[in-house]
Each structure stands twice: as structure tokens, then as C-alpha cells.
Image (tube, protein in one colour):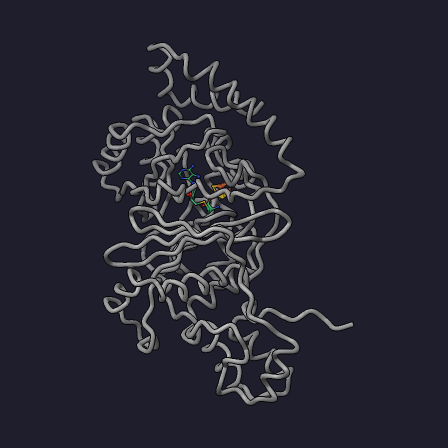
Amino acid sequence: MTSPRVNLLDFDADQMAAYVAGLNEKPFRAKQLMQWIHQRGVSDINDMSDLAKSFRATLLDKAQVLSLPVIKDEHAADGTRKWLLDVGAGNAVESVFIPEDDRGTLCISSQAGCAVNCRFCSTGHQGFSRNLTAGEIIGQLWFAEHLLRTDPNAVRRIEKYPTPGWEHTGRVISNVVLMGMGEPLLNYDNVVTALRLMLDDRAYGLSRRRVTVSTSGVVPMIDRLAQDCPVALAVSLHAPNDKLRDQLVPLNQKYPLRELLAACERYLPFAPRDFLTFEYCMLDGVNDSDIQAKELVRLLANIKCKINLIPFNPFPESGLKRSPAQRVHAFASILLDAGMVATVRKTRGDDIAAACGQLAGDVVDRTRVRERAVHDKQINLDQDDDVDSLDDEEIEQEYQPEHSVQWLKRLDD
Ligand code: SAH
Ligand code: SF4
């Protein structure tokens, strides 16, 4: 019986060197392989012309370069592009390319689904299917970078951003954020292998400042990341106190705010910039009151940070609403007046559901569809009963932190 071929996308530089040594080849062959695969985007081993024929024959027998098959490729009016990728067993993940004047950002997924189950996230509502392999994570960058080089609009951007080592081809993607589907720090080893490839000059050579891991707060893994691969860190906060955060981000029950913020402070000396980012998804009547803004100011007073306010991207099953624009601005003003750095995230690719938290994959594990449908119906009923029929007095109360907790508790049924 022949053993399955290894996926060369699974190896960081050290692992590639070990693999090549195991085939009794010279170390420089590993470097050549890295360049062919990651810098030139070649997947066919036959096309790696400066490798000895005998080595190519061995590789053809034992190895392959395999990224996730593309199910759908969508273009938004604002230039955002979204790919739906097949991860097998009827499941799919997504990656999104967001072009801007001064950068090209790729948002990638780390897991199929997510076990954290945040109330406002459509990936969370989907449940967890499986971790992506290192090759499936880096494969999203490999695929997007090399595909976009054939896109006339993207290629026009290349000349603006020459990168040392990439002069022969230029690059389209300058920034990577792990803000797609999944909790990256719950797939730690594979994510770190992929991060190492992003930073490695023999592969993508991205700056640590331009690679961001976003986490819902897996405290022990924040400490490990500081040691293993300290890239930029974004922490999904979404609430100024444990009572509300326990409801919105269930992982808070395991790693409450005091422990999370202590981990953030320990990370700071290793971070590529002298601040961390906190993400705060603005949910109408849940976490967006003046009182909560002031509570947030007190909570973050001693930590160097930037707060990124994300307008909630609604999806039907959530039973939640986006905060009105004037509420987001009022909330931001309180932070700014207190001397904090706060920004409001622009939503991109709305017409192709490519914004934060809208990434759910169109293909789901069929064995769980019925279970989900029942769950979703309960939430919608709760919403009809309790939210749409609020009178003025209740709307006033909605801005009290206590009330939002009660309201979210009802969604728990
Ligand atoms: N699991 C990681 C990374 C993926 S989620 C994390 O939670 O940080 C990336 C970001 O999108 C997080 O800040 C998350 O809170 C936010 N997000 C999730 N659902 C959203 C929604 N429906 N609208 C706006 N932002 C959302
Ligand atoms: Fe998972 Fe992040 Fe979505 Fe929470 S917000 S369910 S951690 S992907």
C-alpha cells in the first residue's frame, strides 16, 4: 500500500529542511522548494525546473502542493473579493481580500466553524466542525496572492508596494488578519506554523506589524504566542464587564476580564507595536450605552491600546441589531474625550456578505441542520416577543447594563 503524499504547504522552513534532509537531499533544496511554492506560486513539481530530475521524481511520488478547492469566487462593488473554500464533509470556510489605497489585506480562516459560540457571530452559530491544517491556513494566502497577481486591477496595485525579495513579481497582499472563521488560538500549533511562513523571508516576508491574530481571549495561548511568534494582537472584547461578556463571549466564563487584561499586559512588551487592539462589536441596546462607554474607559485606563468599534453585521439568526450610527459616534466620543484611541471600522464587501462575522460558509454539515433550525427558531421568537415590541420606556431601559444581560439571557433558552 502506498502512503498518502505529504502536503508541502504544511511545512514551515525548519520543517521543510527536516523533510528534505530525510530524503537525503542538500539543505539548499529546501530553500529552493520554499521559493518555488510560496514566492512563485508554483504547485506542479514538474515545473520546478532547477530541481534535479531525480529529486523531482521522488517528490512527485511522495509530496504535493495542495490548497483548498474553491467553491465560489465573489467580487464586491468596492473591490472586496471573497472565496468560499471546500474543507470536505460538506463544510466550507471563507477568505476575504480587502483592497485599500495603502494596503491589500487578506482575512483568513483558522477553523471550520467555531466552538466559542459568541452570540453575535454567524460562525459561532454554525458550531465547530474541525481545525484547519497549517497547509490549509497558509494555503489561503498562497492561493489568494498568486491568483490576484493575474487580476489586472490587483496587479496595478503591485507597483505601488515593492517588497524586498519580491521585485521579480511584486506582491498584492501586504497585510494578513486572522479574523475569518474560527478562533486561531484554539488551533494553536497549526496557526503558529502558518504565521511563521507569513513572516519568513524565504516565504512571504511580511512584517510582524502587518500580521494580526484576533482572539476572543484564550489566555494561556496569548502567553505562548508572545514567546513563539509575537505578531500584532487584537482582542475581541465586546463588553466592559464580566456579567455582559459572559453572555456575549462565553469563553469569558473560563478566562474572565481580569485574567484576560493581565495576559494583554504581559503580551505588550513582545508586541510589534507599543499598543494592542481591542475589538468591540456595537450591538444596539446591548453594549452601546454611555454608561458602558465610561465603564470601558475605566477598564482599559492602564493598558496601551486602540479600540476598534465594529458596527454589528446582522444575520437573521442572531436576534440582534446594529447600533445606530449616532449611538456609535456618541460611544466613540466618550472614549476619545477620555483620551483613548478609538476608530470605527468601515464595513466592506457588504453586498457579498464579506464583512466581519458574516463569514459562515454556504456549505454546512447536514447532520446538524435540523438541530440548528430549531435553535434559530427559538431566537427569532424571542426577538419578536421581546425586542420588536419594546415601548419607549423599555427602550430607555435597554441602555442599562443590567437590562442587556437579562435580555441576552432570554436568548440562551
Ligand atoms: N475568533 C476570533 C477571530 C475571528 S472573529 C475572534 O473572535 O476574535 C473576527 C472579529 O469579527 C472578532 O472581533 C469578532 O468579534 C467580530 N465579529 C464576529 N461576528 C461579528 C458580527 N456579526 N458583526 C461584526 N463583527 C463580528
Ligand atoms: Fe468564534 Fe470569533 Fe465568532 Fe466568537 S467571534 S464565535 S471566537 S469566530
